[in-house]
Image 1 (cartoon, one colour):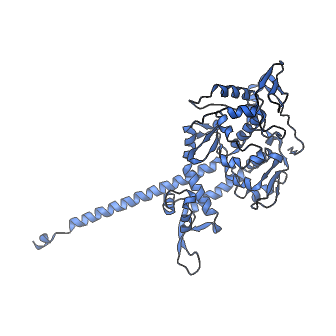
Image 2 (image 1 turned 90 degrees about the vertical axis):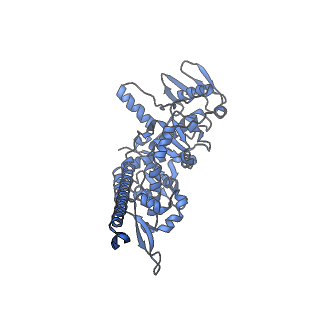
Image 3 (image 1 turned 60 degrees about the horizontal axis):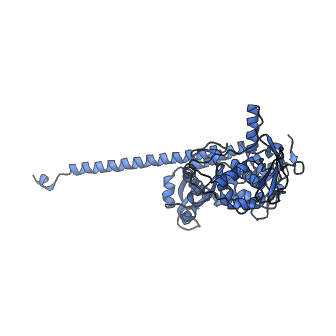
Length: 426
């Protein structure tokens, strides 16, 4: 297997074939900029920074994509509580301590009610917080949940090669191919990395990674020292290459653009989008250090970057605030969120739950995720675990109801069998 080191790759961003024409950028920084094609025709771009700020795209609610987030509400809540318990020393916590965290966990009911609703997740048992104190209820993972956690580790181990490729790609897209280790830990669940990936996975691949500093102290970094050349090919480029192979016709890398029903773009925005789509695709893995932050090429590269980040995520969506933490590493501006509304045919920015979430449109059909990550099977199995718990609870409620009904019938029979005082005297 061949590997590229940091000095062995160079990318030419300033020229690329667009359909049957070749655009050569005469000046990326002049105002207005000039584009000249092979027919020597000249088109004039107004200064990009000015034109983009004047273009307004009205945000429009997408009910299907919002429903996709709503459907995962129960799963997210339960995984959050599980994480809270597992992060405790000994992976146990007094029930009353967990109750005090109810607001932070966004539980709408008391913890005991929540636990009874999902009996497959936890066990409640009595223990002492300190010696010589009265026993109090404690919460711990159930045997069923422990079996699931073991299965989760097994699935991630089987797909470790995919996780290593993801991590390499995240580093390869960044400035200087270095990212804060603490920031990577913060997004481990979005990309499916194991909780302890910096200790369990990274040291196994010294040919790829170098960890500098101590994670958790705020000054640790993960550096990419070499990589498989296949890692530098984006999802967009892979798709174009596959289409070219199947059709025998060269297909240039391009975004899938599908505006939602009822979505309307004003004339000036339609014209801007049309011209922007004609620009050559710029890989997020290419060196972008020479691009002007306000240039149309940088906008193209930024869209490609977010497309790739969302494609690498398990659910093909990520909270916008989390993406914002990587602005320095990935060289996008503080106003980056406008990309998701300017390019509404590629992305959707959901406001569900009071959190801005960037979603990749092409990954969803209606509210169903079609671009499935292999690690999604872990989510499927956890949802099965919740379903088993619900069935168990329903059965318990049914038996309890039947027992109460039987007790009421027996009491009624006894009342009929007891003679009145008048009947006894007779």
